[in-house]
Length: 123
Image (cartoon, rainbow, N blue to C red; front, side, top):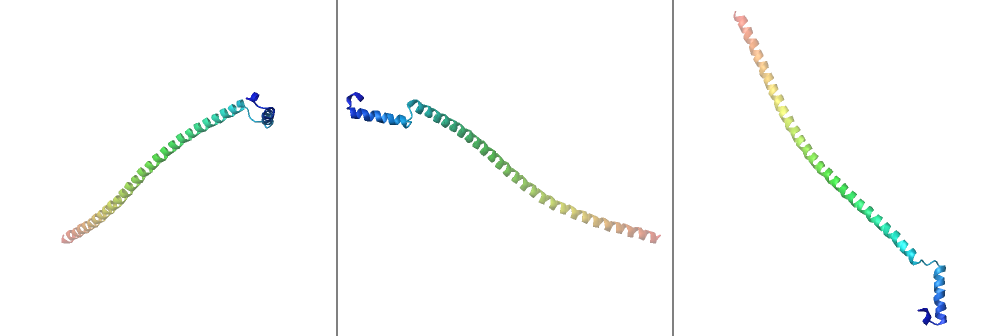
């Protein structure tokens, strides 16, 4: 290419090349090295992103499991609450029955006492 050019054009090309060297224009090997470094960094980033994705999926599964357990526990608490109310009602009925039996027992004891008193007086 350079041979077909006149002296002025050759000088311009030489000056351009000299300027690129002075400015530190990267050569092909340096560019390839930089590309490899960037590709390695990209690969590391992809691996890290995949790890984070797996970690996020695991966390989501844990959250879903915990939420399911929460719903199940809430249902159990509701059932226990209903059972507690039913037991309180049953307990009131039993107490009422005990009070009735106690009153009936007292009445029977009074009748027995009165009957004994009548037998003593009739003798």
